[in-house]
Image (tube, rainbow, N blue to C red):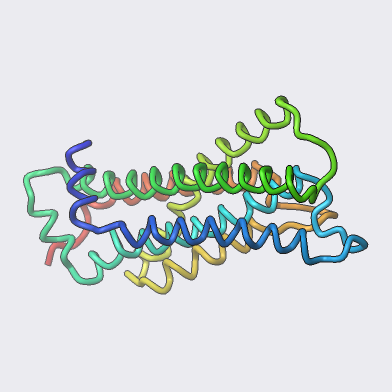
Length: 229
């Protein structure tokens, strides 16, 4: 399995993915800082550090679900569309294992980068807050532990959710459909306002993660039925 993962990493250069992840993370930090700093105090865009973390998490998950859609398009949908995946299927390795490795790579990359980006962004915002005092009070150890556990849970959920665009992409072997479906998912899971925030409800991405895992399982089970001609 690890050998196949390394082969996939060699086959597809992921420099664009990591570059995009770094740029997106820095942009999210700048966006949250600017929202807090520019808005007038009467409007209270972010009331406290906890709400800032919710917004950061929503931005991070939205970004990486879309990046996962692009990754799915590159690793799987384009190969089906160009018929190159059928050349890969002629190798003396199980088709299920080959497609499973691709899906595992997408899920792992998404989950890890979501957690790292979320954690880094939150730490930087906390550091900026210690100098500029955007939010009142000092975060306690219990609060920080709760936030880290929340980030881990959301990261795992996002990893599963990132597999949903695969279904829409495979139906018509369409790259645009794959990316568009990831954008629609983002619209569903990233809504936030002070009155009601879907972005703070972990059960929504967890439910979508179950759907994503079921789609991955369905894809792996049916890969043997793919037409080789």
